[in-house]
Length: 323
Image (cartoon, rainbow, N blue to C red):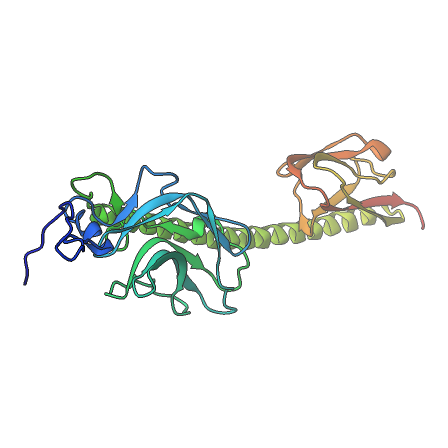
């Protein structure tokens, strides 16, 4: 072990050489104990990582301190970084990092990919005598994607384990536990919301199937009752009758809650009207009500339907006589 100290003004020795010469490492060591590694929160955009277009992210301006010798990194313009393409069937994490290459005496923004997996593991920074890395964000690259959204970028500048803030000249704030607590809470909340969404989708599908089954049964019962009534009626009246069927298809070209039936022979007081919307049978009094008769007849929906919705109208008319 040796004692080192500084700085002093240099003087020329008897050979004309300076007796006090300092290198970059010694200059940086001066800041040990005063400044810690991390990102300066108040400089520029604090190196925040944002989603760009396609498979690109943008690192905002900012300043950071890296390495055992506290060497500085500064970016005064927004830097765009291209990410590797996604895998067809597997996911990965990509870390956005500042890399200090001590051997080649340079610093640069880099991407570090995890191994591909169904549930990938986040990469960790390298910190050795030859290379020292500061992570700014993790980007979750799902299988088959061709663009990045901000929701897939996790800001980790506040995590002292991989980055951290330089907030003063005395001590860096240790936010690693607070960050991990926040991150855990967020992940648990997101997982809960995702499970809730899945449960709602399952419950809705079950309800829809149950409701459709009940309605199909009701419709079949009504048809059977009508046939029984019609047979009894014609038998008692001793008259010849026949059923006339009219059908019309309407595809709306704008959002609407009113649709013309388009069957001029329709009489709401005597005829049976069957309506389906995109293949689903509608129920009068539950989904719609009828207004007018004949060519002016229309249905008034209890909701608004989108452009391109397909309506099938069937009118069943009982006609006395011989067809």
